[in-house]
Structures are given as structure tokens and as C-alpha cells.
Length: 120
Ligand code: HEC
Image 1 (cartoon, protein in one colour):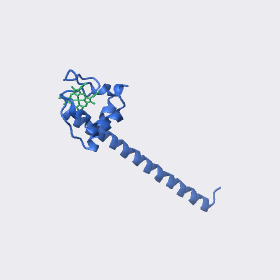
Image 2: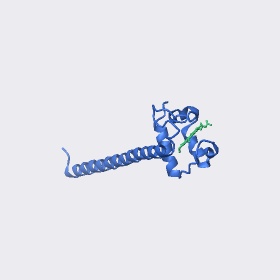
Image 3: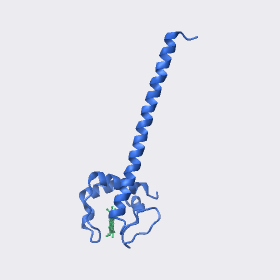
Image 4: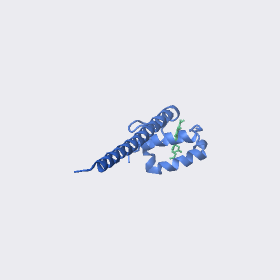
């Protein structure tokens, strides 16, 4: 049989555990919402700026014959490498590809979306 002191200690410990678990759950939920939101933002940006030439989903076809479908980009290089390329404006020089000035936050969103549709 527990004495009153140990019972109180047990109750307090289990409360702490619950608070800790709730806090963890909240953190994971926020991260999940943030990640989902980032992909959605990226999709919106891509629909606006890239879809006129590139295939932007897992199944559509590129409008521009030379523009690679975004879903195969990871077969060419790691998606992370694109961040640097965007930041340095490597694509600005391509004849058919318009210069796209993205903020770092927009680049993050675009890459999160591209990453989410890779086939492999
Ligand atoms: C006006 C048409 C057009 C638009 C709009 C366009 N692109 Fe492109 N993009 C191209 C073409 C054409 C190529 C192929 C260039 C080549 O292979 O030389 C290309 C290539 C690329 C590549 C691959 C480069 C490589 O070396 O593999 C990436 C990544 C890319 N585009 C990203 C984007 C993003 C992101 C957007 C929107 C912000 C965008 N493009 C908008 C026409 C376009």
C-alpha cells in the first residue's frame, strides 16, 4: 500500500509526463503544419512561375519541349544543390528561362515542393 507522500509524488510525476507528452505532441504538430504549408507555398509559386514550361506534378507533361519535368530532377542532382544554383542565379542565363528572383524563403518553399514530387 502506498503512503500519502509516495502517492502524491506519483501523481505529480504522471502529470509532468503528460505535460511533457503534450508539449512534444504540440511541437510535432506545428512542425507538420509548417512543412505542409511550405510545400503548398512552393506549389503556388511554381504554378505561377514555372508551370508554363515545366511539368510540375507527378504525371503532367512539360509545355516546353526542352524543359525537364520537375519530378525527375533528383535523378540529375540532389535537390539541395538547386538551392545554391537558385541563390547564385545560374538559371538566369538560359535563353528560354526567365530570370526568377526568389527570396531565400521562396527558394525553401519551391525546393520543398519539388522534393515532395520526386519519383525516386
Ligand atoms: C519559359 C519557359 C521556362 C520557365 C517559365 C521556367 N523554365 Fe526552367 N527550364 C526551361 C528550359 C527550356 C530548360 C532546359 C534548359 C536546358 O536543358 O538547357 C529549363 C531547365 C530548368 C532546370 C534544370 C536545369 C538543369 O540543368 O537540369 C531547372 C531546375 C529549372 N528549369 C527550374 C525552373 C524553375 C524553378 C522555374 C520557375 C521558377 C522555371 N524553371 C521556369 C524553361 C523554363
